[in-house]
Amino acid sequence: MDKKEEIKKKFKKNNPKISNNSCGCQIDEFIIENSPNERLCSVKEADFEIFVDPDVEKISNQLYLKKETDWLPIITPTQSRVDKFLKYTDLKKDEVIAILPPKRGKATIEKIAINSVMAGCAPTFMPIIQHTMKALSNEKFNLPAINATTHPVAICTILNGPISHEIGINSNVGCLGPGYTANATIGRAVRLCMINIAGAVPGIGDHATMGSPAKYSFCFGEAEDESPWESLHIEKGCNSDESAVTLIAAEAPQNVNDHRSKKAEDILDTIINTVAVAGCNNSHVPGEILVIMGPEHAKTIATDGWNKDDVKKYINEKTSVPVDLGDRGGRKMDEKLITEGEVKLTRSPKDVIVVVAGGPGRHSMIAHGFGTSSESVTIPLKLKDGTPVSSVEDFKKNNCK
Image (cartoon, rainbow, N blue to C red; front, side, top):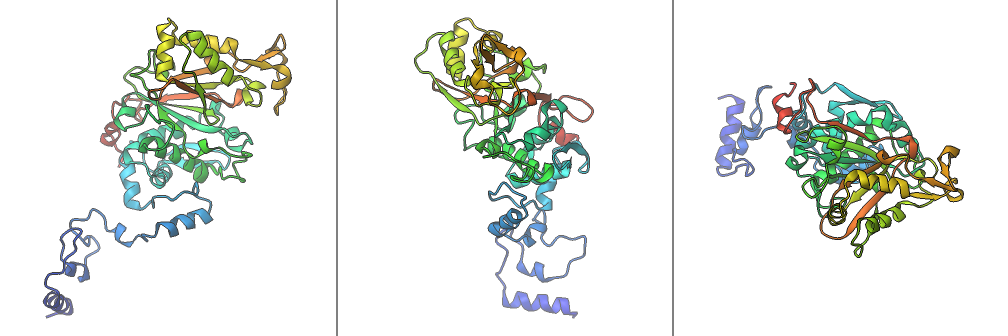
């Protein structure tokens, strides 16, 4: 009898009922030498997890010391976890989606997957984050300025279409707050990519004077079924059956409370007077603003006969501040923007980005933009060959192994 069989026989004799409760395997299987191609356990999908240090605090602290997190605990990006994300892309893991400033880091599929795991995402979120990184590289979004500015601007991600429903993105009650995995972790994955790939580390590549809570996570879906108007992605040129992500550089949102107004003009005037403040970038370099319209406000306005274009035109025409207050920002104001001592906060109705989201209650929210320094970007979710997708499973079916 060789030594291996002797050990096995002795172990069984002394420990006849010991088993691994997690899968039912006999413990003695684990003391027998295995060939390189055999797994330790026939039930376990991967052995790697057995050897991972389970001390989350230790792992998070190590990444914290290296400035590789948002300073919240993370999910350890083991190979088996990352591989699950790589199944939901039709690109190779070393393909570069974007070059992200200020560090000009290469956003490969694998790096995006690693940061998505760390953020706590589900593997099915991978296509959304992949397309978000692609949208960030659009020149008109101006990521170099967004990451390097002293302004507290954050990256807001808005989802539309069938896939937003499929992955459970929240567009209803509390869509800008805690409690929903997709909203919280997709937004967080974007920020971790900014830190670890782009190099937007506070005080190093990110110079925001005070930062913003919106930089932790700023992601939600549009409540298309609650909206009386066409959705954002259709307005931006996508088809109704397509899914899309829209990125807009925006400050943290501010509430608009109007429970009494019964007419469209009155609600919009409340919104306008919340937007029209000195001190925002829009007051001296007019650009985009985000209006997140509560469903009850939107219904009242639409019932009064107003379409979305009417809303955008009215807000653009009426939103202004006195020039002596507006002209206190860091850049010289264009005198062509001044009319009768007032300066508009938007350049045209196109700068007013209107989406419907939220639950019951006569509230809306507004978020000032980054002025002329950035323009929003909308891209549909498609396979590498340009084929539109109806489900995240389409990426899995066309997975590039």
